[in-house]
Length: 169
Image (tube, rainbow, N blue to C red; front, side):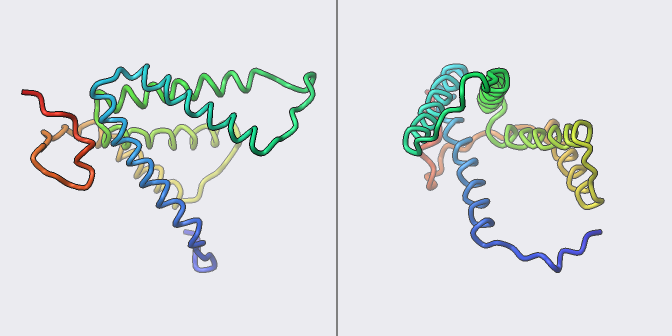
């Protein structure tokens, strides 16, 4: 096992990771509410449109110079765009049909794909602690498959009650 006593935790980095996790969870909750009434491809379109506008705005604000036309390879950009589209549309279909919690748990599979690609393509090797983490993620994915969704209790008025879909009569 690795000795972690020589490492210190960066409080700003740790805080940003916690904030990112909370925002991701809120993102899933909001999308679960939106997907109650809107088809997943429509949500994907508007999400990707918003993402594109954000990137264009950042590009305009920071005024970077474009590379020369002969040095540009469009294939990586097209593949990245396709992968981004597929990941968003499958996420939204998952949230719509499985719910936010199971989709978040199954989303951990992305980490396993990254680990396998790093092992095969980049020649990475993991420590025993890292393998233990991969095994825990794999077990979580298996448990998520067998989990049964619980019936919703619409009677509560918690902080995020506005995210609950309307009650049909």
